[in-house]
Amino acid sequence: MSHHVASLFAREINGKTYVGEVKEKEKAKKQYEKAVSSGQTAGLVKASGRKMEKFSVSVNIAANSNVTFTLTYEELLQRRFGKYELMIRVKPQQLVQHFEIAADIYEPQGIAFLDTYATFITNELLPLVEKTIADKKAHLSFSPTLDQQRKCPDCDGTLIDGDFFIKYDVKRAEDLGDIQIVNGYFVHFFAPADLPRLPKNVAFVIDHSGSMSGRKMEQTRESLLTILSDLNPEEHFGLIIFDHMNVKWRPSVSKAMQENVKVAKEFVKNIQAAGGTNINDALLLAVDMLTAAKENKTIPDNSASMIILLTDGRANAKNDFVVKGQASAQKWDTIFPDQEYIFGDFTEHLWAYLTIQQLLDKSVKTA
Image (tube, rainbow, N blue to C red; front, side, top):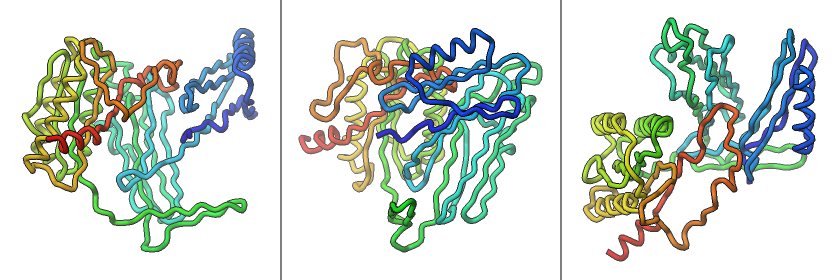
């Protein structure tokens, strides 16, 4: 079931609004190309992938026209770890005359908190994020000027390049939850409040082989730095980098205290891409690390252990990692045949998140 859908595509041309129509793929493409060839204003939205969750947008603007394109995109937000989170990928790849991210939130139960951060936010850009909360409504905006977007005073490069996150939660009274009724149908929302947070023990397994060079390695470092910042001080973590060989940051997992996270971030900043790819041995080493931590009682009994694998999946060593009976795999090109993205050249298959709790349990039972 898809949690994302584009429900409306419209354009306003010189004060008049034109609403897009859903048409057969080839017919829509031919009509768009015909309009472009004649110099008319036109737009085309294309969804690809089996779940219809990825969109590419093509537009053409006639000379001397003032055009506003509007794409309405609906997403079901799922509450995880006590909050709702919306990620907006922002990659204009150029300076934008009138750039703005604005969000209006309405929750009948009331808004408990609202927070935001972005992978590209600097100390200079941080004050530009404005937030207002009034009981059931909240507004957030981020609108840097042209000069504030620049990487340097005299260059045309933009600082706005990454992901913008909005996090919030609703007020949860001690009652039977929230009931919403629309057109004779109702939905009953209820989530236990004040549940204790389950501590995690995370082994990050990071591919730094030659195929990860360039933008892939840069994105990996950026993502890891963000993830490390989000770790709870009571949680434990370890880092393993691999190419055709494996290197541990430390022999065992460490508590996510401020000083440990700081040292880990310095380690991550210095990861460089080189060598072959042996995923199997790196994952087994991560399993051994978490298993040993559990046996040595260095992690809490009521905690969840997991492995997060960051790789482009291009293994070239002899051993292939297989979890028989616990996972099914399909060729990525079959699931996502078109790798173009509306917000730039972000490569979806860079991230392979793998949780191997069952394998850890088996290791403990057979030990």
